[in-house]
Image (cartoon, rainbow, N blue to C red; front, side, top):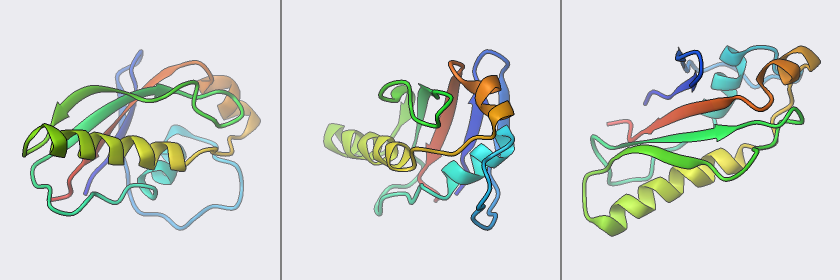
Length: 121
């Protein structure tokens, strides 16, 4: 399984790696990627599937609004597609709020990010 978070305006993509949970505020995009990656468990029964969600953060670590799908490739019918997108959206929303350092909150608040959720197979 691989997730990537990107700052759309700068086309920055960061691979997510497993890392122990952190007690201190997140201080970099890489740390945000790690934290979000821990929230995603692909639903069973999907292969070669992904959805990319677009979203923004407020400085307080919450989402600026509901994540929006920008690219979807899901094996299966329309109901399966809807279920995969819903699982990814729910995983992102359930991961909130994140705790940002003051510097990171000032840097990323209001920017548009993308995050790809893969089936892991």
